[in-house]
Length: 76
Image (cartoon, rainbow, N blue to C red; front, side, top):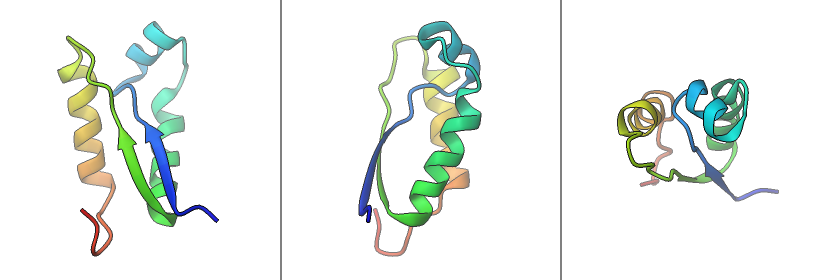
């Protein structure tokens, strides 16, 4: 049984993931995994803010979480 997931959401787009970590289809893998985690347990989401990547990575991640992940009652 999992009570808490600790996940890293590193990139807000596939281009940065491919360029810096050589990962293809990053968002198509990470987003469903975070959605599943939020539906089944508590989640601590970490995001390293990379210099020069606010608009391309940090902002899209924050917007996706705000839009796609609803807070469970009692969660902050």
